[in-house]
Image (cartoon, rainbow over all chains, first blue to last red; front, side, top):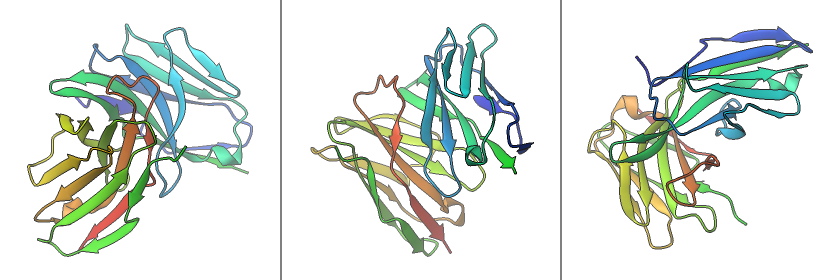
Length: 112
Length: 114
């Protein structure tokens, strides 16, 4: 089983739609969680951290369920500019150090 | 405050050659992590340097090596290049290894091996 798995995608949605991305992780000792956004041929950029209590930033809502080892990202009222690949990232303590483990990403296309 | 900068932005090498990629960390950051991102995949952790010492390594062969300098800039060296090494190489810096606020990435070096 991969350390971090995400919905395979791609997701094609119309403007204004609500879309949800799911992510699961295998290491129960994982300590922190993030969603990154990556535009085509660009570097990943931090979208938001994910807290146990859930957190919201404008149209974006992130949830964490430690018992199920599951993270989600909800985008409401999607815009054309939301089109990108969304990467789930889990910060794990591994033997020999700590590192961020990225999921494979889910591509979103918001259509006019 | 300067961000993370990487050089070169693009590079074409021949199979069997060696390459050195460079990363200047964000001001005040003492930790640098390197990732390889193949087309259509998520970034894969190569290794991390903290205060000039390797602080963790992913599942990459020894021909991938690194270095961190006293100013916390870093190099990634790859020997005996293979076609599968073609990827976007990303560098991220952070303040300390207990990074809970997320990494800031440089814009990457796109390496093509022919």
